[in-house]
Length: 428
Image (cartoon, rainbow, N blue to C red):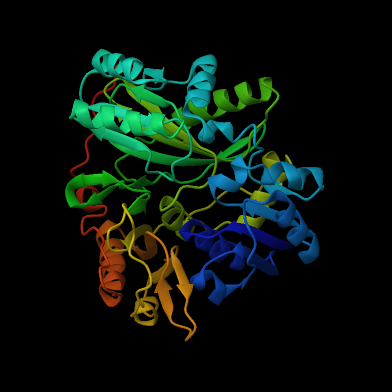
């Protein structure tokens, strides 16, 4: 099987790595990829958001499957174009991808499907936003309704800051969703879907804030780990029954069946499981940790989903090891990242037992050096027998890598390692 992966980031590098290890996949390509992906497979410099360009490349390569990684190509209709060209694609249509592209749309679907989620108001101007903020009170949760690469959410106790974020979204021509604050630990669950059937992957937890102790502004994610030993055994089954399947049925009912990854961002609150958000693709950086543990060949599962045959797919099996990934970001991220610095220590990090480095914001300069070209630059993945060993491996890799201004958190998965994550008694 020949597979074409669409996207430039760490999530795509993790997908490429997993597909390359699949004995049934004999050829992997990526477009546009990054410097790390280019070391592993052939990359192609196309516009990933141009449906015609993606179709042309898939035809040229004779691809048996196209896997669309990021949200932007999905929102621009890349999957629709591939479906029209009769090329199997793993990734939802433009209409189905509205689950991520519009938070208001997702709230509407959840309401119709009776999926438990935070109460919310959609605001289109300052007066509506101010009223909604006062209705819910602090902490204030304000979300840009559209795509914002994981950085469109502000959670703050400062009403002025919340209102300022809302006004910035209005000034850009958008609307906002203002929600009640959800207490309790957060969990990411990826659910592979074929429109009717669904298969959950292993749960993960990521870390959105830029600094240790969950301080500073939100980012696209500064690290993740999997599995989550502190979760109740019934957690995944409950999410499938109360969230994933009702959402799939509602999407099918609307004539927009969902094929691809339904990313369920969840909070485990005092009142039970609540959906924070849906995404329409693998999450980054959770994918780097989750796929590092997947033993089942990935290609066959994704192809089965693309062809609507997920009920015939192989049962998923997982490594008993724990995976932790730590993101190293550019100077000044998440504001305006400083680019161009030469990265050192990659070979040494990859040479550590149990460690591999996934590239995100990297490129190669004229001399062949790997340089910083984005905000989140690398994710260093450590595998080990338990959280302490996996964390030690990941941070040993981080210690080998350097460039001017590099920044990373030191506490990824630390509370879980110390047994400090608690789930409140639920009253649904």
